[in-house]
Amino acid sequence: MGVRLEVYPELQKHREALVEEDRRVIESQWKTLVHNLREAGSIENAIAVCDVSGSMGSMGCLQYHHRYPEQVSVHTEVLPAVSLSLLLAQLAKPPFNGFITFSQDPEFVKLDPHKSLRETAVGMGSAPWQLNVDLYAVFMHVILPLAIKNKVKPKDMVQRVYVFTDRKFDQCVVGVEAWDVQQRVELAREVHPVLGQGGLGVGVAPVAAEEEAAPVVDDI
Image (cartoon, rainbow, N blue to C red; front, top):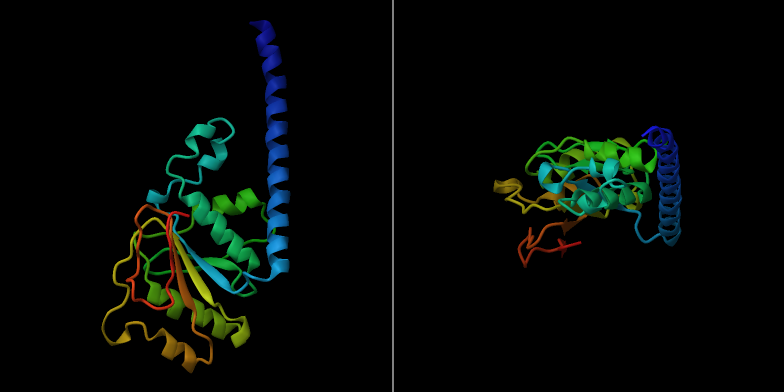
């Protein structure tokens, strides 16, 4: 028993060293991925609405995946949602280098460039959320005011909004205001964003087949 008590701290040190090495490797790989995509210039005018609600799973799995890797695959739709949202945020031009919360009162969250990949991902996982999202507010109360405040030129305006969620969507606006986004954006001399919705759950079809400019990507 005495030998085991002496050996265990040494094993723990090696384990922690391996975990830290893994983190450094992942951090480097992520930076390389972002750099290569930025150089390609194919994804730079997009922003994400990131759902981190309870049905998506918990970012807490990042803290235990080295000990319990078999549990990471259980209810972890939040991982691709956060990963893709973070990727779009780091590729976007200011002031859109952040993400929008999945909420009926959506907010823009700017990321801290000084935080590590893990710190940023865990922080995104604790962002405010609600059971549904107001897509009209995403455009008219978040994106457009942000663009006007920062005097964004039309060529630098957000072109696509990706909604990463496992949920279906209810009707987002009603009455005469329903999807007058294009008219209001044109009045502000900006361009009309295209809505791209990525379903992270099975059988998600959030828009009607005839809806224009709203591609659906299911089972990412």
